[in-house]
Length: 358
Ligand SMILES: *Cc1c(COP(=O)(O)O)cnc(C)c1O
Image 1 (cartoon, protein in one colour):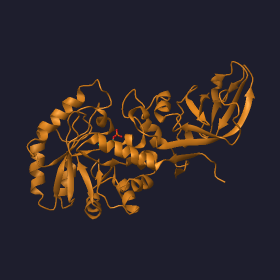
Image 2 (tube, protein in one colour):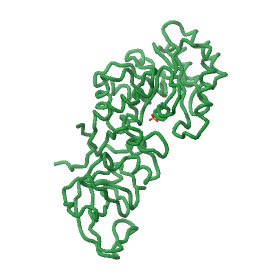
Image 3 (tube, helix red, strand yellow):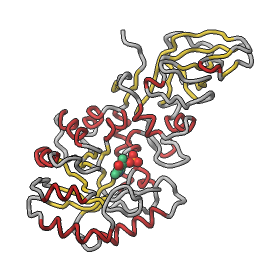
Image 4 (spheres, protein in one colour):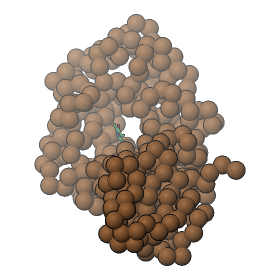
């Protein structure tokens, strides 16, 4: 029997969250961002579950796009980092991938005989990760025009640096820069807007929005949880209690003896640790749950197990399942206890943990 440490994946919640993204996107269509193995949920099952509702997917690299084709899905797939090698252009042509080109070297590959029937151009509107600056666009557009009818430019893409922070003026500035930079080519499509942008009142999302974390129920907004934004948790991470015991006041638990019992305490060990992707930085008092009741971690997370205080769950027994995050304890809460964001926790779950749909 395998250990019962699993990530249960609620595909109905995923589809509900996608519908929420569509409602919030208004007249824009939403391409489902399923990179990083569907944010750690398993790209094959995530892409398949969205197949009836999502007209387009987006991923970071060609291997991820191939994983979507491998399960027989035919929707176009946007490659958010474009192509990483000239040879990838042949795959774009064969498999209907839409690379977002961000650098001169990628244009060189196209001019040297590579074909990509549909391309996007990335515009750097201030985040300064990837893309052409607005003043470089006219020259880039002239190059693309020379490529002939085999290469069709679909439109322009940009990305927001601070959409998660409602108090930042950066998103307004970037939107204005994007509109001005692309205004000479009004018939081409435009795509801005990660999940966070769906929650900014009045934010234009143009033709295509690109929701990622919100599809999985994680919050894109600083200081808010997914459920507070109307999103449903998709992953429930659970693991069994493998021992319970009383520790006496003054005794310690775990590596470094960082937690010392103030009084006699019933505690348990749970079969999950940082080797499964549970964050080692989650310290004492990080919430978990058992039977819908909240409990807390104590001491340091080990590679294969962690300790919990069972004072709140006196009836808990070996074999009972502990929820590390899910419907009772939000992944955003655990992330903030570990000093990170839900994105990192979800994508960090390792291959040792089976992803089981329900
Ligand atoms: C990952 C990514 C997204 C999705 O971002 P979320 O914050 O998860 O919604 C959108 N656009 C680009 C370019 C990305 O790399």
